[in-house]
Image (cartoon, rainbow, N blue to C red; front, top):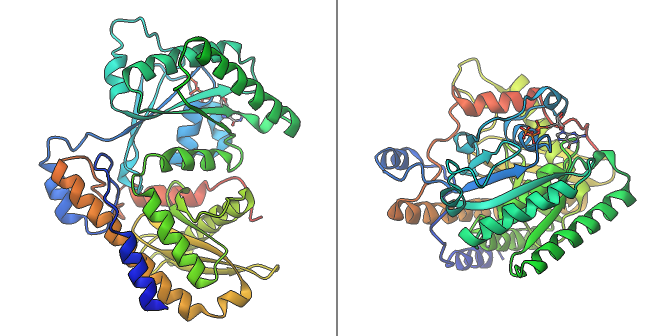
Amino acid sequence: MSMEYEEQLAGSLVDSFPKDFGYGVENMDMMQENLENSPSADNKPRILLMGLRRSGKSSIQKVVFHKMSPNETLFLESTNKIYKDDISGSSFVNFHIWDFPGQVDFFDPTFDYEMIFRGTGALIFVIDAQDDYVEALGRLHLTVSRAFRVNPEINFEVFIHKVDGLSDDHKIETQRDIHQRANDDLADASLEKLHLSFYLTSIYDHSIFEAFSKVVQKLIPQLPTLENLLNIFISNSGIEKAFLFDVVSKIYIATDSSPVDMQSYELCCDMIDVVIDVSCIYGLKDDSNSNAYDKESLAIIKLNNTTVLYLKEVTKFLALVCILREESFERKGLIDYNFHCFRKAIHEVFEVSSSSTQRTGAAVQSSPPSSSGNGLARLKSAALNGTPRSLV
Ligand SMILES: Nc1nc2c(ncn2[C@@H]2O[C@H](COP(=O)(O)OP(=O)(O)OP(=O)(O)O)[C@@H](O)[C@H]2O)c(=O)[nH]1
């Protein structure tokens, strides 16, 4: 079985990867040198955060990528200029997020929206669901129609945000209404080809991480290969669900093809918090070079409902988190062997993709989170400001 498994994994690596996005791999030193000399080193894909004033754009960015606790966002000041955030220093996901001030004036000659939209992978438009959203819908239409004309390849994502203040019925009704009106506006403008995806989000639960995961996944050209590897891994190991997580942001960059249920995702996010917290408190060595998340990172949590959570390091940025039944965990040797093959395959996937991005000069993840730099600081702050939920 194991040989077959390796063959299947190898087979699935034959896919060729589009070369426009770059992601993290582990043997980075050589690559970093090349990149520093590369003129296009800063040519990273862009995710734009747009929406009316106070809709929650900066909060989303701070909570997801800077581990700010949701309550602290109450004190965020209004953004007055475009804030460019390069989150690639400590995360697998290698892109820029541009947070726009509430009112972007497309008619302002100093605002070169063509240049901005041309290099954009995804445009997230945030609508405050607790407010009257008529004005926001008008703005959404103006923004996406302009962007679409400049670059029809952009993924248009609408976050119906702050839904923590809404009842379940109200949430569904708001989503239906916004969906209907936004698409009617597009149909009136003969823009039926422009596809909008909608998400109900809040920074006070995991919905914002889940939505961001889906946005980011659409930008990962290797996604089908990753899903394929995860499917093969879980079916040969008796595992029920597996997520490949970016540890710092807790975005899952891929999962197997069985449906994602929110509780499983939350459980896995919480496990990452626990592992990093415990590692920060008890796992760091005295020298300042040690890292809270490293090659040795591994955790097994047995729940009282015969479920086992299993976390293992895959790369400097990625962890595999699995949910399985206790009886399947009895074959831990098999799971570990299959994991070994899976890990090897993941490394090959990103080595192939990074060597192809190097050849084309596109951006790749250049600096792993050094213990003294951003990475550890963020992991440490993750430990201090983990998500506001306790273990489910
Ligand atoms: N209830 C609730 N409040 C939120 C949520 N997200 C953000 N907020 C609050 O919304 C307010 C505005 O958030 P910001 O992130 O500053 O909004 P912004 O869109 O960046 O605003 P500008 O910089 O003015 O464009 C803050 O008080 C946040 O605490 C959410 O999911 N739920």
